[in-house]
Length: 295
Image (tube, rainbow, N blue to C red):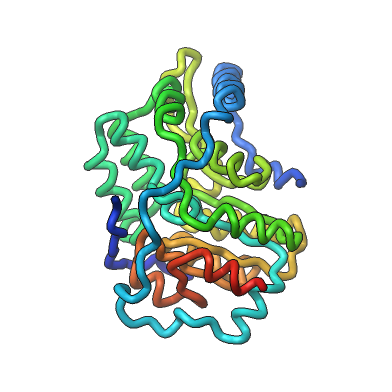
């Protein structure tokens, strides 16, 4: 997609091979030590990061207004059943929360950061600008991130575990492509059985004492158009004939372009962003629809 789109957002009612080395972050010895320390801590706590049953149900399609793409065409179904790989967005897709908003709320800056997130996801500001602005509002330390993950394990969207298992059983490769942070996405990948090398996301950087330094701007997902770049690189390196992107936002829609994803499926079970949903090849509100379409 050449430009980002603005969107009205309707929230839900709440109750294995190595990828391209160009995506690997570069950092000083102290930064590497802290990244390793965080990874060791994550392994120790992995057992406590099991999926929490979400106390919400997917947004009902009947409340979504009129869309003519809620029923897939024959061509869309054929592509869905034959695709070599599926790339999932994480926040408000695989998980029911926006990870950076939850972390910011935990650190006492929830409202201000959530406003920036809404602007970033609608495409009204460049993603890299919104990312830097959000982090500058609360500057999380390594200890805060670790404490947050221990006390607030990821909340997985209903049906996503079964969908990932179904895809893997069909030898379809699964990736997580996110503008969020690896430190918060690693536990999600562990729950779903997705290899760490299949994660393309941003990296928080910390100093020798665990203080916040920023984020790795070399990661493609740290800027506008980054998800599309990541998807194109995956397809080029792996040689996939067909690839599908699933997500809820403008940055996910961008991945549908030549050399990238052939098809964009908009998942609106958490957030319905109308301008994004209208441009999707297929609009779904429940992952079970995608599971059933594979049979």
